[in-house]
Image (cartoon, rainbow, N blue to C red):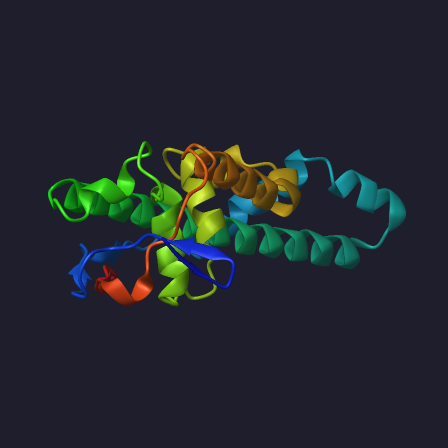
Length: 207
């Protein structure tokens, strides 16, 4: 075991670099046209009974009310598309981790690294840490939360299933909690994978 900067790294015999499967980044599912998404977001704002409160605050001010409706709908659309981006990244990362586990299992020199009865060992979250160490460009998507969002939802939830409270306030804590619980499933202490010993390609599946 190598200890660097307070972090534990597993020791891999030799000095060769190991090739991991490519990380295939799948983009968000085909979405409805923006006009349709805005229509659903506007309906969501109305269903959540936010507008009656605003109407009481701004009586006889239809323009203010309409601007508030549009602003809130736009904010929900932005939050929802961000949720889809996180989910897609999380789905891609979890699939890549499964491929990496298969690679490790088929290699006698790497197989012991994932055995919890051998210390030091790596866990599934070690692959996410490896992506951080490799400085993978996620276009602003938080990888931990992305994995947590995928763990929370088997499929990306449609906008009509999301409340405005979830999109504006709860999405981040839900994803963070899911990731933390998932990371804790590997028996501690979990060591990191040395980034200089692994290589992999990142393939954007955008058509």
